[in-house]
Image (cartoon, rainbow, N blue to C red; front, side):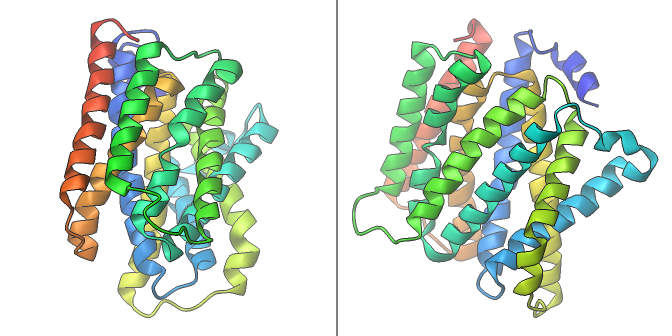
Length: 300
């Protein structure tokens, strides 16, 4: 599937590849946004550790059925097992820390910290991947981040102690993105997705079982299963995006999550966006569209 997609999009070295990667990362961000909204909703009635564990358990179930792993045991083989495990643990770390932060902090506070990750990704991509960002891309990232600051307006009050979890989530995410790009050179997308789910389910099993509470209704059960579909599907698209496009090109487009969060906040939690939210989101979108334009014309 990955190879077919690359052929259709023109392959990793073509002009179409970065654009296709941007499209994939945008859809992945939508999946992650819905996942966060679902986790926040579930956290009102269930322990966070249980939600994190079930997110990975359902991830494993969905990927095993989707790829029919029992017929293709080779999907569980990797040429770089240590790196795969480290990458998977980074995913566990960013998921756990983000879910904890969402439980205690307002969405604006967690986002203002999480969206600093493009700086870390762009900085690390040069020495670790040899993908050095140009001046225009750095400017676009800074402009996009300024839009996030307009929306979140950090520093207006005292920060909750749980903000440290957002910082940790951001760092885990940055390393997860870098390791994903590294592993796409040797391992298949399905293998990376399956292994990350298995490692996450095993790592979180003791804590998840220890705090287990029976979900109060069928909706809660359905939403817990949905977290695996959203997480697994989103990260498959995430992997595909990094297979065909450089990490610094994709990094700014995690800002698109702020648009989805505004929409979901209104639909699910009845949060009406303010003028500053609308203005900041417009800046974010504009910076992303600029990078897309540059990739289409001649690249950055």
